[in-house]
Image (cartoon, rainbow, N blue to C red; front, side):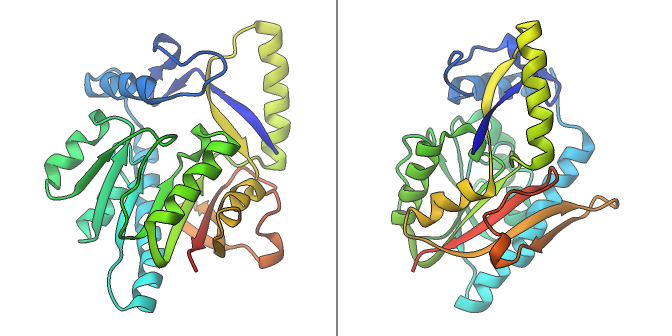
Length: 264
């Protein structure tokens, strides 16, 4: 199950001022390039809590996911970071010495990170048509699957499956989880939008953990783990493993989910 997601602003940038793909297409490369140009020119920016949450997410993924792969394989993984944006989380991995190739649909957002880490690989492509070179041990996408429809997400995961090494992992993190609470909130918002005729920009989709899981299983991958991603009152990020029988069921509250799949 999924619902359309609409936004009027993000990181203090007025999205309604930017060119979009239209009412039937979610945010794509053109909008994101405009958005990051706005940020680069000082017209908006993330608040400190957002930046901190991304960095702590990067740290916990490195500590618990990358390290688990390293302990099993005896070496550090070669990582492809899809839809890295400004690289708040991915910069943590580069600081720790991981071999990370950075991807996004435009190059504006990556410029500052590339200046800090000029030896990191870069791949610029639309997620919907990307061709991924082989040889990666882990392909990870944080908080960006929402821009893809169900068929597009399934196609991307199939592409990633053919590019990741045997025994490699594909990691999908979703902040647009359709929980029971969010479903109620979005239903009320939809009613308000109909009354006001002001929907904002078609941003992507909310989807359940089950749909996220189906994208991996449908590509022939095995589920290694599914985690609730929890931010504590101290602004720390914690991964809580969901029991096997709960992996694909909707969450109650608005919390993000991280799924790890393995190519057998």
